[in-house]
Amino acid sequence: MIQSKEDFKRYVAADREKYHLHSRLHDIIYHYEEYYIVKFLYLLRKVEYLQNCELGSGLWAKLKFLYYTYRYTKMSNRYGLYIAPNVCGPGLYIAHLGLIRANHGKIGANCTLRPGVIFAANYGVNNPKQIHLNVGDNVEFSLGCKILCDNIGDNVIVGPNAVVLQDIPANHKAIGNPAVISPRKRRANENISDKQ
Image (cartoon, rainbow, N blue to C red; front, top):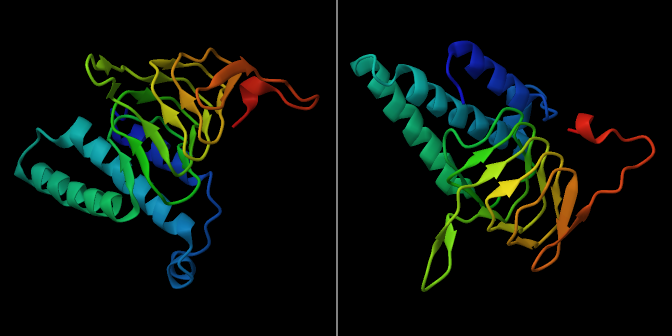
C-alpha cells in the first residue's frame, strides 16, 4: 500500500520496469499496447497515492483526486481493467488489455495478470460465501482463470481457464476446472524464490 511519495515512485518504477517502452511519441504513433497498460498503471498508482496520502489535505487535493479518479475510471472502462486501488503490490504486470477484475483483497508484489482473470468476491446462490482474498508474491495468473478461494501462496502458477476453489500453498500450480493443485517442478537452472 502506498503511504508516501517515495512509495508512489517505487511502485511506478517497479511497474514500468517490466515493460519495454520506446519514446512516448513512438508508442502513441504505433499504438503499442504496453503504452496504454503503463498509463493505466500510473493512473492506478496516482489514485492510490492521492487516496492514501493527500485526500484530507484541502480542496486542491480533493480536486486532484477527482480528476485522476475520472481518468483512471475512464481507462478502466475502456479497456476492461477493473483493478481497485490498494489491491495490487508493486511490480504488477498486465500481459495484455482485456477483462481483468480484481476489486478486493490483497495481491502481492511482482504478480502477472492476463486477460480474463476474475477474483470473485463471493460465490454460491442460496448461501453466498464471502471471499477475503490474500495472494502472495510472484504469482502468475493465466488466461481466463477464476479465483474463488481465500489464500494463494508465493511463487504459484494458475493455469489457463482454471477455476480455483481451494487455497493454494506456496510453490504449487493449479490447473483445470476445478483446479487440481500439485507441486511445481523446479528446473535445473531455476530458483523459485527469485522468479519474477
